[in-house]
Amino acid sequence: MQKKSIAIFVVLVAAYLIIPATSFAQPYGYEGTQVCGMCHKTEKQGQQLKIWQESKHAKAFATLQTPEADKIATEKGFKTKAAETKECLKCHVSGNGVDKALLGAKFKMEDGVQCETCHGPGSAYKSMAVMKNKEEAKKKGLVVSEDKAKLCTTCHNSESPTFKDFKFEEMWKKIAHDVPKG
Image 1 (tube, rainbow, N blue to C red):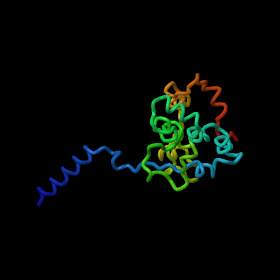
Image 2 (image 1 turned 45 degrees about the vertical axis):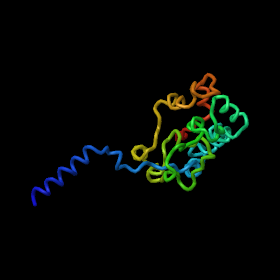
Image 3 (image 1 turned 90 degrees about the horizontal axis):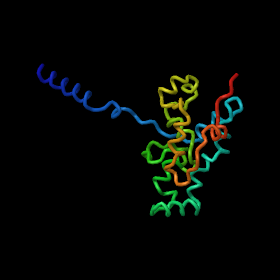
Image 4 (image 1 turned 180 degrees about the vertical axis):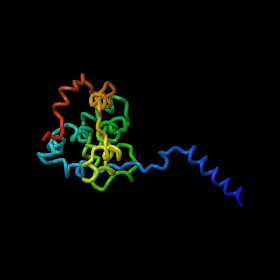
């Protein structure tokens, strides 16, 4: 009986060491701008929702639904419309390619490049209790990029068929959305 218990223990330890820890982790889900915007719309908070709504990021998916975008997709050799082409969607839609089970009830692909594209899926950090503690929010998936230019150039680069010189400082001024001090 003792040998059987030891064998079970050895198998469990071996499984623990062989199977990556990420196999046990629940992936974070995408909530959508509507959820983020509930708290990030006030003047005190910096009106991040309004800044996003007025940005080209909010219209990124709509851009793919134009005849011009379809023409570009065709010229690049794609057989699908731009709004259905994964190479286009990867930069024009938050949560692209993610398991549908990880998309919250208020998440809408049509909202384009949303908060969670840059700040990470928000299901685990969306609550006010978590967001009040930035370190706790980071532990639960909040991304606060130390190198914003590098993050931006994952999409704003020469892979884009409409790429023009990307001037980070100039463009960042259009979407800067820090919480005001004080």
